[in-house]
Figure 1 (cartoon, helix red, strand yellow):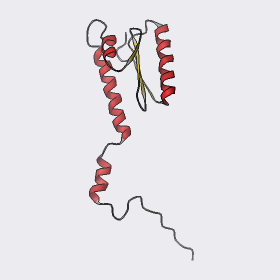
Figure 2 (cartoon, one colour; figure 1 turned 30 degrees about the horizontal axis):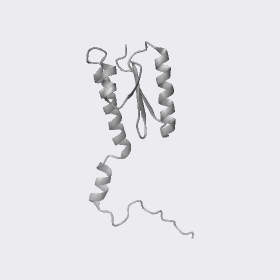
Figure 3 (tube, helix red, strand yellow; figure 1 turned 90 degrees about the vertical axis):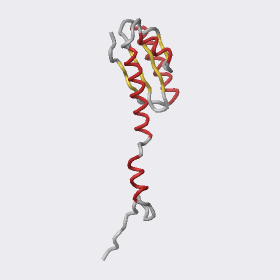
Figure 4 (tube, one colour; figure 1 turned 120 degrees about the vertical axis):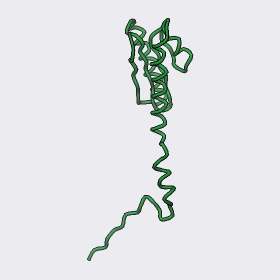
Length: 120
């Protein structure tokens, strides 16, 4: 008769029920990054509700880098956001895209959120 192998448990016998429940309930790093991305998008989207080209004014006061009046980007630790306020100037768009991809590559970032909500 052959020996039966026992796989090690990822939970030790010393782990309490409270510790297990706490590890389940605590949001991980990916969830926290998602919350930051949603906040960035809400800031960019709410700027469209203001008057007199609010997109540019709002992004210039945040940590977005503006390229012209209608394109902005930010590179975070694990993702980047590319915001397009209007498709009026394709040179502006391509310059922003090139700047973003270079910054993201330098930071080792490979995830991107493209925000075109409310563009004109």
